[in-house]
Length: 171
Ligand SMILES: [Fe+2]
Ligand SMILES: [Fe+2]
Image (cartoon, rainbow, N blue to C red; front, side, top):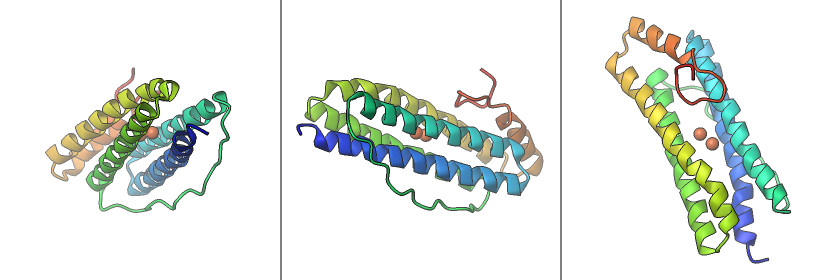
């Protein structure tokens, strides 16, 4: 099969997106426990969004007439030092996702799989937005220097996130 390597990599990305969802769901629980319902809500929506990403890969493979093979999902961490630490872990994770998407684009290009190449463009833009949103949240968390009042204000803002958006304010 000419594109076997490409389809294997796309299959692996389904599992990776599921892991992302699992990790953000774990962060959602962590924030709920910490008494930060806004951050918990933001992470819950983030987890939902990662499932949508997984299902985009799932549908794409089926539309190409390829076999979907689901794999096991790794256990995510369940605790972080504080809110800043959790959002820094989020940025690090999204940077890893970006490098994986870039590798997929590269593979699509070198294997002349133009359909996959076009499909992946959406993810390229999505990663720019995700990294930017999380970087802004980290900047705000750094500004307050651990001040409880500031943290509650950020939490209130993040609680305004609506489904289908990566920003912290209503669309
Ligand atoms: Fe994703
Ligand atoms: Fe993501």
